[in-house]
Image (cartoon, rainbow, N blue to C red; front, side, top):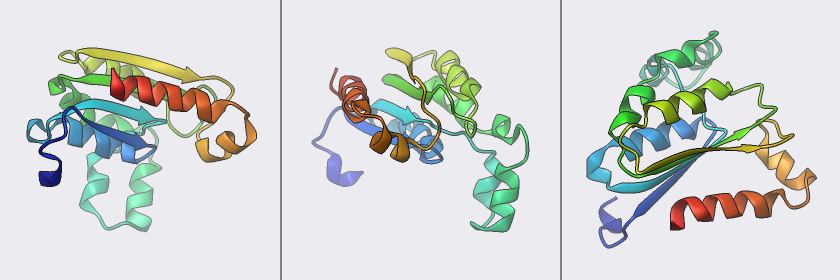
Length: 148
């Protein structure tokens, strides 16, 4: 982040599991992030960050409702910038509730919104290839989120 000292407002975009990382980065005041976008953004049980990537990590993530023990729902409360949560309406991997809780807890946010991508599941990469125009729509959402 030290190389971005001249860049304001900073923006971070997290996709799927990196949605958790993006929220953690944005919530840390020293990072001076003013725009946060999550795309089918997950929340992870904090215990997953305490074990090496592998079977133990996967077991924690696959435990039903384990995402409820994520720190991001508390951390997002300190984020003062603009938050955009992009969900896929047919996502069976990341519950829609995660986005709703992020928005509900983003009490200091200048702006917080949910954008639903219709008829799309968690596999955004496949959807971008299969659905003409989706990349343009998603690009507009991201640009609007970070440039306004």
